[in-house]
Length: 496
Image 1 (spheres, rainbow, N blue to C red):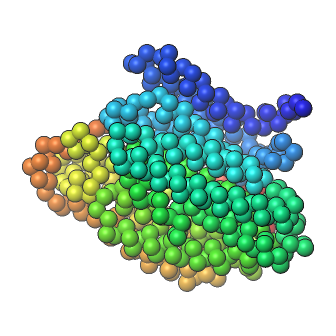
Image 2 (cartoon, rainbow, N blue to C red):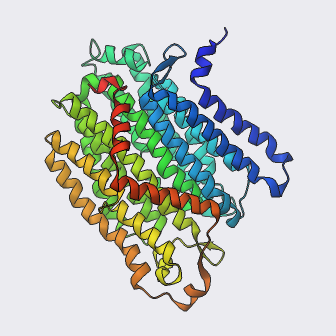
Image 3 (cartoon, rainbow, N blue to C red):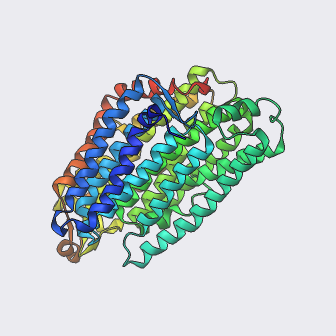
């Protein structure tokens, strides 16, 4: 049976990304060692082409493969964000891989393959399509986490991520199978019709819903499914950690929202309280445990968990019973805005960690930043901006992101949830500003002065410039991004 040409055109960006990834794997063995940067630039080139193609998704929607894939404004928003994050990750990696002596061109193919999985996730209109995207993303990230093959902790990170990831994937697939048994379909629209009918009070439907939430909870690193996050973030190469912390989280939230709202939008009372409970414990545990960390990557790992909790506030608002349609939509759009802003400040923070070298190794401990302001004023200033943005201090974009999320909660008559978030946002300022204090108020030891340095390359400079521009400009002029997010939500009709 032939595949309609129109369907292939609909998934052209995915085909281009996978095609270039395979081409890189073919060209890698025959490309001279000194010229392999060409393969990284090829990766960036395909992302630019895909972005131009995807922009047409904002003006209309298309369905392909008999409803398995949908290309709408909602998917286009997430894909554009994923292209940007993947491009900045590739730029960051070009110099970082050389410093770490793991400059292998297949790395860029893995980035593209993971991106392809994420693109399938955000466009999936069928649970099995989304699951295939999750597996393509996850298996690639398992490999990338262990890319420092000569370091025991990197291999350990890969093994832990694989074992726990496989376990969560099994739970998710079991939930999908139970749901198919109850509803007779894995299509989101058909599931929505079934759960609002005969399957409404079926205990198996509720069990399937819980298992699906557990599976996605692992992917977004929500408590109590976060156990893998600190060890994997610490052991993986820093460029991979940045990619996981931003791109993987964004794609997982995008798919999670689509599943909850399009398949289970009519049974919000069955899942909104559960999501609320996960949100509360995620915000609390992520922030409290981050306080006692001394390793920057572990601290940012628990920070990432806390930010997943903040993002879940948007899911709670979108699913809160009795909330008007426009307020539910604002919950989704505020989550989209928040994750876009989170991408800039988190990528910037991890780029600074990747730049800091202690002897021949990465400077990952908070103490390694001691006196950085005296040795590298520009680097210290950039880290200052990223830290205060992560803490949500105005006039940075981090403040805008939290403001829109918490105001959405207030408008949904969940003012107490906004206050809860504000309290823990204030607590988070302690561990973010601790790094600022160490940089500006602590004298470096003689050994640190001799051995600690910042390695800056043109590619890393571009990453830092993009991150700084995003944090500053979106903090002052958030309107255009807010408008795009609001427009993108309209294609997610079950929000209403």
